[in-house]
Length: 140
Image (tube, rainbow, N blue to C red):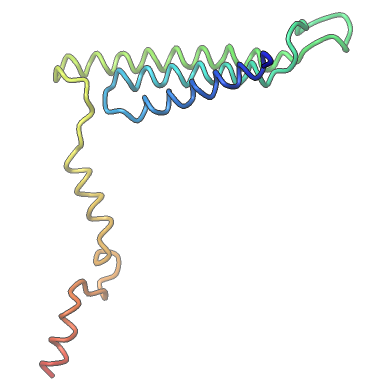
């Protein structure tokens, strides 16, 4: 196995674990998932940047590597750090207010979602009672 294949496998494992942790209801696990996704993104940039060992700036144009992926990696590190600090602040505030780390289902949002899925709200001509048409015809 080459070094690049090992990095691709490590990146895939980090992406999959990060997505799994992001789908949890615990805020701490969401933070860990976000950190894993940030590290997987940095590995992706490292793999996609090209051959290793060449300097980004040199005297000849043949022996240099594109410095843009390195700049992207540094930018991704800074953005991951900033969002992680924000998520830590949210976790701390949630813990102080409710002593809970779990994200709860908001009943008002769930009710809005159920109302949106109701076909009678979209078209007032649609009758949700299938026997109502039979009763109307029998009444005539």
